[in-house]
Length: 145
Image (cartoon, rainbow, N blue to C red):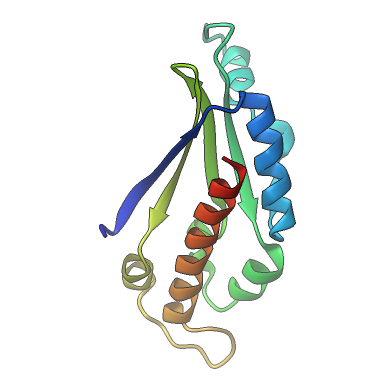
């Protein structure tokens, strides 16, 4: 597996149906969806004067497990670049498409420096946990598809 990959999946479910199903599954798995009121990328771009076809939808869900990340960040604040995860959902060719960036456990450890801490998890333990999170994200998406 490469150090960074794009998770790709799609469904025949209508956009709004899939978005609701996915949101329910995300929250059911203990994640929270952050900044939901700002997740509509089309509304953002239209607000900036960009013309977008009327039938195109594109949402960016920002998800997090605050009970985990909140405990982990004080050990190494540089972990903040990994704790918020983004799932992109858009419609294309009659399907609802799903994407997110997936980082390998090795890359996360390397970027953070493999640090050990007296209090809190090491960077390697954090990287292992992130790998499990990405695996869970895939399972959550698959269950909503």
